[in-house]
Image 1 (cartoon, rainbow, N blue to C red):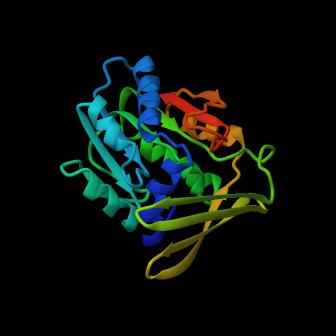
Image 2 (spheres, rainbow, N blue to C red):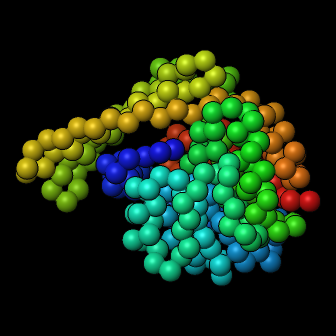
Image 3 (tube, rainbow, N blue to C red):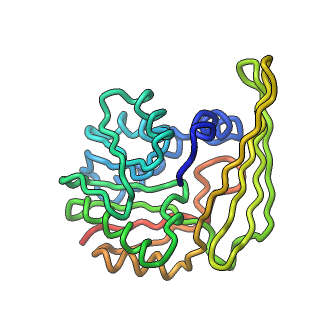
Length: 243
């Protein structure tokens, strides 16, 4: 997702206020990795965003790194995680020249791929960065049958002398979701608004599973895993082990 500067500035603040616990999520994901690869010591976070999960991953694993396409999000991560390698890159094409014991891609980011070919390319690139026996965890977006067309949501909070409002509306356009995200921020200087439009593909479950298999990984679907408070961001997680 190509979040802009405004979205990157408020991303962690708003989601934490909504009840999202990045540290607990990272520990749960690390537990899933260690259940399948007890000796895992290195982890790559693809589409790492602001680095909120990596902040905890680096306490659990000896060696961590991140990949993030959006410059604004990566800059936030760089300020948070000095010394952690954070690479600019598209998940379909990045090449770090090394492997890891685990690769994770959460936040529905892999579903931002526009086609099934792109999804397969992204999963293949991630699997290509796994050592044999390494674990790949990817969080999908909703499957077509589960998506609520016209879903709206909103949140308002106060912090540091500001009132921040985030309103979203998601509609189906063919096999994709068009999500409009609108922020209004008020402080002593005035009121500002900005809007971003995000597109996420409604891939079928079998399309994710086929991508894992083609990439040389086993695949297991862990349904309805609620890593955060409230409504989950998707139907669950795909977990694979590189053969």
